[in-house]
Amino acid sequence: MLRDEDTSMIFYDLDFLEKRIRYLQSCFPPNTLHGLAVKANPLIRVMQHMSAISPGIGVEAASISEVNMALYAGYEPWRVVFDSPVKTESDLNFSVEKGIHLNIDNLSELSRVNGIILSKPSATAGTAGIRINPQVGVGTILESSVAGEYSKFGVPITTRRAELEQAFLAYPWLTGVHLHVGSQGCPMEMLIDGIGILYDFVLEMNTKRSASGFPPISIFDIGGGLPISYHAETPAPSMEEYVQKIGLRAPLLTDPAHFKLITEFGRWSYTNSGWTVSRVEYVKRDPAINTAMIHVGADLFVRECLNPKDWHHEYSVFDKNGSLKTGKDDHPYNLAGPLCFAGDIVAKNVSLPVIEEGDFLVIHDTGGYTFSMWSRYNSRQTPRILGYRGDNFEVLKERETVEEVMGFWE
Ligand SMILES: Cc1ncc(COP(=O)(O)O)c(C=O)c1O
Image 1 (cartoon, rainbow, N blue to C red):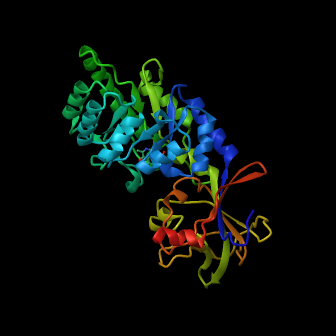
Image 2 (cartoon, rainbow, N blue to C red):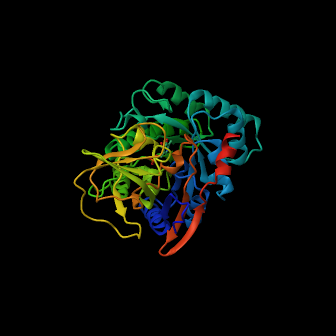
Image 3 (cartoon, rainbow, N blue to C red):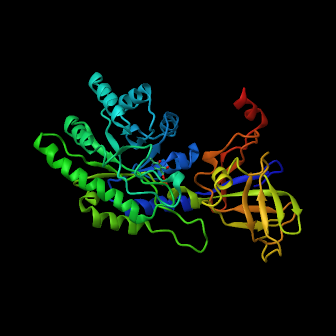
């Protein structure tokens, strides 16, 4: 499947991915909407495959482009959850008209949405929730933790509780809540704490809303963030256990008679289903360390290169005929990308078999938050992306041409 021009390629195991999503559905109540986070994997062909699994699969969109990509991929508006923290008036108008589920980020956005709803009595009935920061603390990765005392996302529950209460008692249409604690690095207990804090608040609000004749808050979006494992030897937390623990802390939440849950798992859904391969173009041998020069660097592995202490992958080496290499070289390897800055090293000091020019390096667990973060720096062509089921391969996205790269800059 690797042509001469394919200096690197990305693969998705579509059977694995489908099994994973079916397992996800089996863990949650049947009326749950699983909004798979587009930011983890925006490939339209993959979105289409996911949509075909069942109507219970939706998307979580972080921008108006992601919203439109989902609609283009065939998702009905009610399967689209729109979460950006900087939605414009025009984004909001579009969403209300279409009937997309809006997660409102802040109190100013809330009053804008109210104005739009009042001005469009004939708009398709969408639903809306407000993002609340439960302020449960940060995980091991600061950059992806969003439920600390301070966060740029959502309305903080301790300092803005009075305004939140007022909002739920002013707007009958506000029937949802949303939280997201962080992405990778936040333990399951922290996610459960966040859900618990919101659950208690929602029950209290529902008693007050019922006294005013308002419909109850019945849409509870728990966000994503359940961590996965990037290490072959470390098991990941179990989704089944997560849902059981949600049920223990917040019993009515898993009862479809009371709540419709929304989830937004991106990393958990996609990451372990994808891997990347690069040809090794050169090997530099120094007394202390070898450097394997490969065709993907900080363009595909932005976080790994810029924040290496937090992000890890497992690697395998294959010879030019595709046979797995075993054993260990006496000297470790730096895996260096093709970009023009010293930090363009995907991993340092990795113990690997002897690598030679023309070998293939496989980087495991790259199905989420890699290609979606592609950087244009140095104008490299994006790799060909293939999906497979057993021995059947399909092109999910062709390798970019030089002309297409030029088009980006023109
Ligand atoms: C609002 C929101 N929902 C869902 C996600 C997906 O998180 P994860 O991929 O860790 O499940 C993110 C990721 O940053 C997010 O910001």
